[in-house]
View 1 (cartoon, helix red, strand yellow):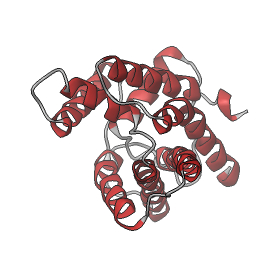
View 2 (cartoon, rainbow, N blue to C red):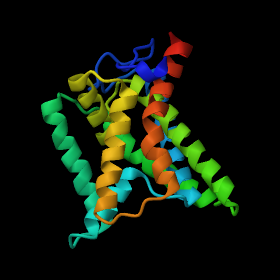
View 3 (cartoon, one colour):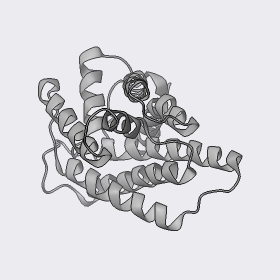
Length: 215
């Protein structure tokens, strides 16, 4: 069952190592495709107006207690997470860089072209779709093994240390982050809770799906 997945699967287009400047076309394609889905899902959550992602809630909560902007706090959090990679043995790659660029572009495009539903029920449905989209996109790009984004790399590193299923590790991480952010004063919406509790299983499902299709 996909909720028990502990390792990132390897398929015929998986890179042999994260630091690979000349990956196969198929590897680069699925890296970009997965990140596009990931960014689309992040954008849909914003458009749904049902709450920010857990890490954004954390950044907001911290910003309310220090004299720094949410954007600055977000950057500092990303740097702190990358520093945590060192003891966890995680290595960056081109996927780490592409992660920041492609996801940012997709969020901007989504905000520009996808309207917010006027009906609250439809907004909640859009939020659910966003979580599933992020999860599947995350699963696809992680299988490429060209380097993870800061938070996904943290998830992989913690999984290796704890040996818990990926779904459990990611859910625990996101729930902890949103709890701290909420305690510090960050705003939590229904969409935030969807993301915090649902992203772990959705990433695991994305990994399972890729493995079943390309195995």
